[in-house]
Length: 119
Length: 456
Image 1 (spheres, helix red, strand yellow):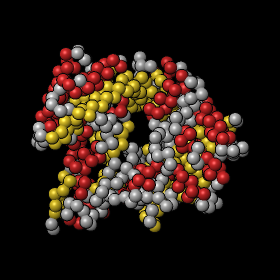
Image 2 (tube, rainbow over the protein chains, first blue to last red):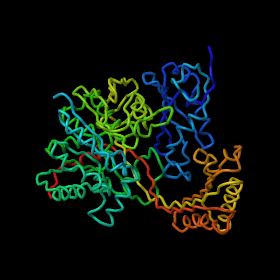
Image 3 (spheres, rainbow over the protein chains, first blue to last red):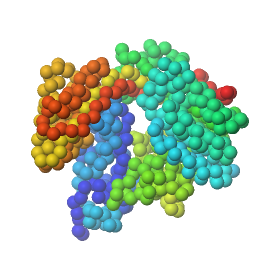
Image 4 (cartoon, rainbow over the protein chains, first blue to last red):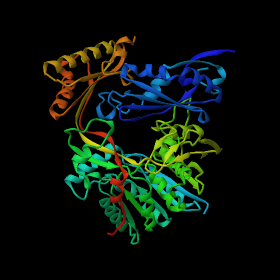
């Protein structure tokens, strides 16, 4: 089986939201074929590492197999959030794409949507 | 009765003023009770409204009320579309009087408006009592001036207001989902115990409350998630039946997209534990919902489960948050990154010379700033092209305006006293509100909640 190493962005989409200093980021596979690879490879520990430089202290992962989705809740990921962040994006609205870009996954080609720019 | 139709006209304070037009047109053709909600009350919006009311007792409702209501009021009334909104903000009574005035201007003589009050904790509790309540999130309250303190009410008071028979219901702080669940409770008579139905109604509210976020807006990613005609994105409409089963669709003859993917992204938005989303009405478990495309731009959602709500309500406490000072300047062309780095170090040194004690962050946009940290530690390790276009930004938070202005002014001074060819300076010095979330026993809030009609 041919596999590719691609950014998570190639097989999944997501959205970031905030509550205080906590970030909530969903990751949803485009194709059901990608679900098992997502669950196996995109662990809470790996996500926490992506946000460690911002001071993140913990990460919970919730699995929603019906939706092909993982929901990550990352503690202290927002350098204070809208209450205290000096950054331009205190809500962390852009962080879904930090995650989708930094996490690499190894998956079969079938996990990518037809016509994907990554193919 | 078959279905209740609920459309959304705005998903945040400042959302498109003309988005509700096509929603009203579509609702007018629906066969069943119709509602239009506007969710325009973020945590900070309420604190700002509270400040406005302090200066003018008749102010303190949404400053955009006229923009949202005036264009659609006559048509909504003519088509029995009832409006439910948190535009009341810090002054639902004032908002009701304003809507009645708009109705009079439009020649509507029989419009009826009700308000829900009782979310404002400062009206019934002392500041000392509020300070002692347990904080679950945000900053500590000790010694900070409390600007606003509002409990999140649930859907029942909205249903009570609708039972009066009014055309418009205005509230202050409720959960966003209550704007949708309230009409459903009113129409279907759902009660405590109907936990799964209340959960589905809350799910409907959660999907609608951010407006276009469920119809392709805040979703488009060209080449990956393409959305037709985003500039005219249609706002959502939920069709809900007595069992709580729902279809999410959107206004007719508009752009945008309702698909399994747009619904899933919004379903999980800011939900945290999907099996335990706490609201005053029900604890929502959406971990086993089914999301199914049944036709183009029509998605059915079933399977939300509910359990009884907790004995406490969440309240948002708003505290004086001091000042944020920012300044930005751009460097472009050959060696731009080196000039931007020099500008950043000049700003840091100048803040030292001026004796600024507060932490100052200096970003370089184009060099990964938005995903970086206060120290810019990712930028230091990155191998970036020296040539290009980079924008330097300095930011500070301070308790006094003067310090915020000083840091911002250090960016301005780079025009003549910084590296070569800096241009496009912009400065922002803004007053902020900080928030904390607390828990309060619902018995300390609900006895003060009232739904009542307001007369001109």
